[in-house]
Image 1: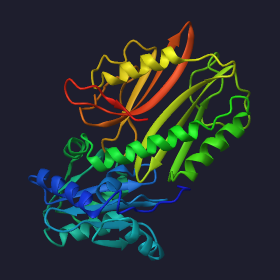
Image 2 (image 1 turned 90 degrees about the horizontal axis):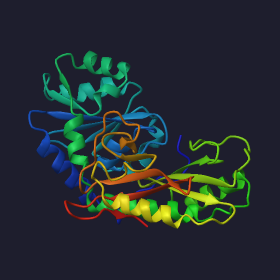
Image 3 (image 1 turned 180 degrees about the vertical axis):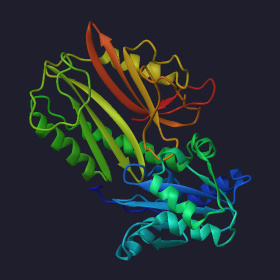
Image 4 (image 1 turned 90 degrees about the vertical axis):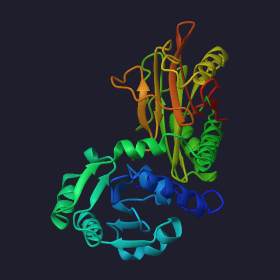
Length: 344
């Protein structure tokens, strides 16, 4: 369940942004009568991109007819209807415990044998899929993931702006780290600063002692910090997520060489080999419903390299004088021949 404030800003996300995205989607829906996009608090990105709706909890289906306004079918009580209407750009909100049944009825009521594309169909729960077939036995369901991913690949100006704001929040939050504090105080300072600056959510992970283990973990208790440790902030702002990572050396040893190497490598993206010289790396971005999905990396068997114009979060482990440095930042990938822009 989310803990931060979710509120819509019509300055940052005016109606025209959502209208333009829906127009692009409908233009791509060749052969489809409607599109379904699922959302919950762990897979909110598809519906939030189209409507601004970000669930605190529970689940919903967005019904996008080819020639009618979108409708949100939510498994939430009627008491949250005013909040959803304030924070979302939808024509109507329908409340029901079985969202698949109602979504199928809406579509089949207009055309019983409608062709319906389902975004991220493979990850739709079996119960919802069964309900779609029960209430719309003649509906023709197909996977529309590739269609949707192609639309989302290139960020529009609004998404770029939100990513820059989220990155700025993460950077300011990480700047609150006092190396000599304990891990609990560090996490509290990072999270508190992010929320003061408007983050709707922040998750903090730590690699407490890079000399022993480079893995990021959600900390429980008060493990001892080594001489060198790393902190990662995953921040959401208005439905847009980014990650930033910093390495802290308690002896004050600078990591300038690593930061220069990291920035130079990120600038070469989306080149597949841009980060290959590092001991490990991950490039994440948003394709469907997950806010941050691993697209390529040293441990990704089947990479999906991001395209020029997309917003990504990059993490890498760089060896400097035999010591690991973990770094991470968000970036906007440039067009062919242009360097990627790393968000401050």
